[in-house]
Amino acid sequence: MQGTPVRIWDGGSFGGTNFYFWHSGILVLHVECFNMDWIMIQNVEEDIRGLSQRPIPLLVLAGAQGSGQTPVLRALESRGVGHYWNLSRALAHLLQDLSRAARPGALSPGAVMEHLAADDSASIWLWDHIELLFLPELKVDVLPWLKRCARQHPLVVAWPGEYHQGSLVFSRPSRADHYRSERDREILVRLMQSS
Picture 1 (tube, one colour):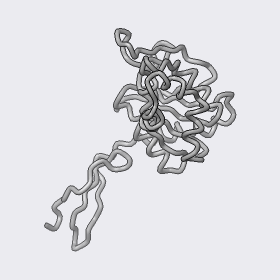
Picture 2 (cartoon, one colour):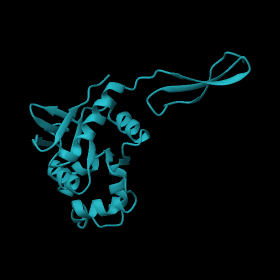
Picture 3 (cartoon, one colour):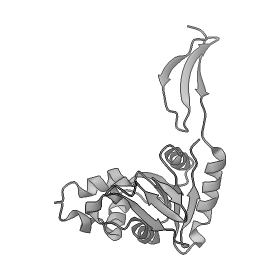
């Protein structure tokens, strides 16, 4: 099998595909399809360094699905910049034992931040998969909610939608979970482009 790639792990930590193969009697790791945009990571890191000087330490990474937000957040975590959270998963754990009527009240920024702080003391939180916040029955005005959370703890948030004509947008106007908020000058928005 010398020189023949044997795929044993797919989806490297930075968007690559890893293969191990034998070469001259040595097991070698070879990374292919390395597509992480290091310039974007460096730009986001620069934005994060400036968060402490902003009135509201919130950086929003706006982009459609596939624009690279998750790999950028994961790369930032691996570089020690902050702690990655799948926010929908964390909120689902918080809400799972509550009745439907009690759920909207349980998502106050203070309650959520207290719940997350019990598990994490990182200086920056990297929030991904925030889609649960857009459920109409939870009655969350998402951007102001994120701003209130960021006042308690600096945040970098992957916005799962577009930045269009000065507004952060989630979903289509015909859907019940549609959300559109004017961009607030107190927060920083970085546009993510699909590769």
